[in-house]
Length: 152
Image (tube, rainbow, N blue to C red):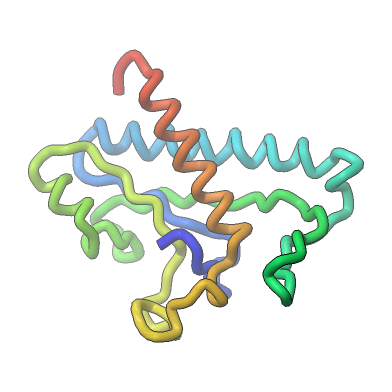
């Protein structure tokens, strides 16, 4: 659930920790990974190859590679499990949190009422690949950071 970039809250995603201090630290590390990734995106967007480029776009034939585009900066918003806009409650992560496993959920700023939410319109054509790539990079960075940490 990291590919649908909502029109309300464009380029925003949620970082939803489970219960406890360890989960809160995971969320904090994920937010720091977001800030590092965005700083790198801004730096790379100043290079001659990317300067002045806009968002990525799909190529109509699916075979031609797209032209260079700017790296998309995204905004992570920490949403504690008790906050109504957190979607942790609606996932398997909640079950893990309930038994004491420190968890953090990364999720799009989703809208349950949108077309394409687990229905026949939930296709690759409705996925923002730029947004999904940014969130994937942040998840990898956060996992690597946690794996190398002395303690959480």
